[in-house]
Image (cartoon, rainbow over all chains, first blue to last red; front, side, top):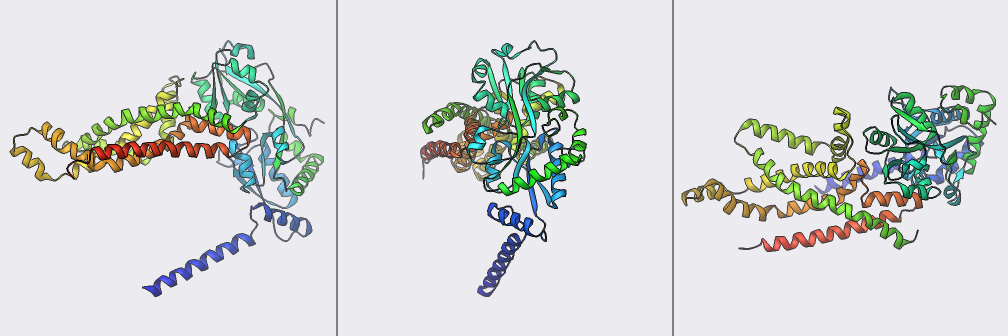
Length: 282
Length: 215
């Protein structure tokens, strides 16, 4: 019995050792190792680097799941093109949007690249941020027969917003006075739920990014966007504070893609957002 | 945001957390007994159907049941999504917990030996009298630890009401965590739940003690 036990223990130890060996020799996502992998990448390209892209899988047209169940979207396609150009292997990690920066710090992904608004607080916290690539505004989505024509009509109404989005942030800070006039502010954990609440008459308006609203009304009848821009903002890519080199590499590849027209080709597939892409309208 | 402000803001949601907790217990404890009795019915069809319902309720995540109760009527029949989310939340929680309580009650009732029923019959008790005066008091004593287990789980499960945008304590904690890029609200939430459960433990302990006659 004792012999059997010790044999089992030895076996378990061997297994755990080999597991450790496996993860450290392969490209791992731990921040420290990423740096060395990155350095190795620029020095000699023997080992393929894995680049883990952090996305919100419910954020069309930037990142979403297509009809075949694969993740796609403008950001995903651009990231794929960047990785192809740099000879990296791309992996997708779906972040929990309100925990995205914690997950980035934890090394679960190497960047957050998913229609992400650049916030002052991110810069202050030391995250490396790419050049903005998209100009965006927040708009109100309402039902077609709604009597809401501007944000002044929202007094006493209930408004939905997605947790962790810039719309939510906006209502807490710059638009706090407006938010205080609402009858109720409903915070949902995905846009689908916000829209379901609106469609099911539980809320009167949804505060949402313009491209998401445009994409939604293209597919669903009975809604309209209130003609009022509520907060201008720019989208960028976030990296960990130690990953300036990584950011530079991605930005370099992006510049190449813009120069050779690949970027415009990808953008052409997403007509809803093409007018607001900063690299194409410089 | 200061630590005190954070705690204050989160305790605003604590009332809603308590609302889920107490309303769920209020409805699920008796409903569980009804389900348990149906499950033990001599009629095979009724017993079979109840058994199937219990297995669905226990075999699917509470989170899905919350979504189904809240948005199901809208997607299936075009009904309005309820504005007051407490109603669908309590319905989903009460039904789900009733299924678990039913199985606990059944275990308790079936643990009473047949001899006691026979003895009661000899003494001239009716079936209802036997159940209410002889069986149930013993069942109560036996199932208390299992019930406490479920009640403690319920405290923590209230955080799931977030799925349907019900602004309970944990939802507010998440919002603060997100806007402050801080992990502190989760620590605060953890302490809140722990204290809540310590109280639950204490109260359940008192009840167990009161039931601890004869021994």
